[in-house]
Length: 208
Image (tube, rainbow, N blue to C red; front, side, top):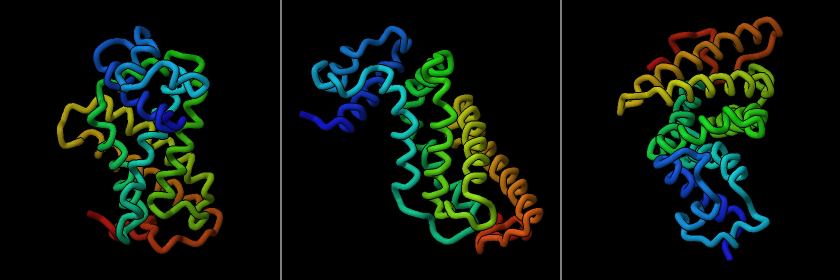
């Protein structure tokens, strides 16, 4: 029998495939199992439709660390690289993801959990970029700032029409620069030392 993680992951990919064809509200667990090549029994005490929706962010978060920490560059550049890997991994499932996102934003069960998912995504982005320490600013504040950036970028990605991610990349770059500036202001206020890759006090460092 497949492991719990395998069942949920296969179920998620099958659900995204189905959600590209019809509204999530019309999709049953039995349909998901069939599309995934599993039986309904495989999901017994493993997960239901709600668990599949909850698995969405975590599944694509892993893409950020798939290639390890990017080569030495500014913190902002490394964050940009790893977060874009997440959106690139999401792209083949765009239609299904948009449908699941639309559903969870109207479901009280799921919408109350969105902040926790955002926080977890931000934490993994920072870890994947090798900047999940407390240098420059407390890691807890970094997570809050990056969670906001990712949420804003996700909204841009959902509106994206260009094959080259122009809107998504512009939103991410703008958000990261703004977050860097705000954290830099906090660092100067608290007297914290900058990290070796911080670009706040040297805007030309690390520029593309």
